[in-house]
Picture (spheres, rainbow, N blue to C red):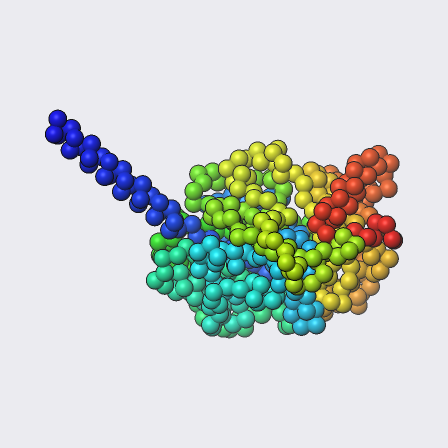
Length: 496
C-alpha cells in the first residue's frame, strides 16, 4: 500500500515537473529562421535545370528541402520587392512603389507592421546582413546589422562568417536572420567580379567563357550578351559559396535542425526582358524552403508569391502579431493618406494580403487546394520609370494590365547602360530574343497568355474571341483585388 502510494506521489511530482518543464520549453522553443535573398537572380541554378551554373551549395539546399516551380515576386524591382517580402502586403498598399534610395525616395508608411519588428516583439533577436534596401529604418528595424568587411555585400563568404559569429553569441532567444547578397546584381562596371584571386578574401573565383555560354531564348545570342552572361554566372557562383558557408555555420552552431531556411531572389536577372517586367523571366523566381520538421523533399507546383513569405514564416514560428493601429484611408477608397495612424483609433489585428504556404511543403498536391492564383503589382523601379502594371495568374493563364500602355516602356539605368542593350541600340536590332524590339518597348493595354502552350509569352490572346469569357472573368478579379488592397491605380478602370 505504502509502495503504491509512494509511486503515485512520484508520478504526480514527475507529471507536475513535466508540465512545468514543457511550458517553459514552449516559451523558449528554438524555431529559428534564415531568409536568404539573392539580388537579380532567376532560374540560373543547377537545381532548376541550368547545366551551365556552378551552384553546388544551393543545389544541396534544394535537395534537403522543397523547390517551388511556380513562385513569383509581385514586383520585379529590388527595393519594392523586398518591402513585399518583409510585410506580406502589396507595395501599392504601403507606399513603397519603387526604390527607397537616392532620388526614388519611396518608403513604407510608418504604421505598417513589418516582419523584423513582429519577430522582435515575439521574443526573437533579429539581424540583417548585406543588402537592406528598405525604408524607413525604424519601420524595418533589426536589432543589429553585421556588415563589417563584406565589400558591398558581394563577399558572401564574409557575410556568412559574420552570421556565424552573431548566431553563436550567448543569447537564449530564437533568431531571425535576413541575409542578402548583392550578387548577382550588375555593378556600375560589369558584375564586380574578382580581378584577382584574392579580391574577395575567402571566395574562390570561378571563370566562365563567353564563347561557351548558352543564353536563354528571351535574350539575343550575340557576343556582347554572352560576355555579360558569363560575368553574371561568375557572380552567381560567388553567391553560392556564401550560401554553403552559411549552411555550414548553422550546422557548426548546432542549429541545422531547428532553423527554417528560405532561399529566393528579389527579382529576375539584370537584363532587358527580365528585371522590371512581369513576364516570367523577371517575375518567376527560385524559391527553396528547407523545413527541418518536414520529411518530404522534392518539388511543388503550388502557385505562390512573395506576399506569402511573411505569413508563412509567422505560421511556422507560431507567432501572432500584436494588434496595430489602423491608418486613415483616402476619401476615394485608395491607399493610406500617409504615415500616421488615425487619431483615437482602436487597435486591430494585423492582416496580410498573402497567406501561409506551409501546406505546400507537406502536400505535393497543394496546387489542387487553392494555390492556383496570384497577383502582381509593379509601378516604378526608379522614380523616372513610371509604368504601372497589374497582373493575375490563374492556373495556366496570365493577364497583364498595362495601365500606362500609351507610354514607351522605360528602362532601368543599369539595364539601359548595359553592353547588352547598347548593342541592341547601336545595331538597331529588330528582334530582341524572340520578341520584336518594338513590341518590347510598345505594349498593348492588355496581354493575355497561355503559359502552358506559350511559355515565352509571345502570342497575345487578349483579343481572341475564344478566350473572351475567361479574360472578362480575370479582369473582374483583377479589379476586385485592386479595390480590396486599396490600389490607387484602380481608378484607371473608370477614368482612362
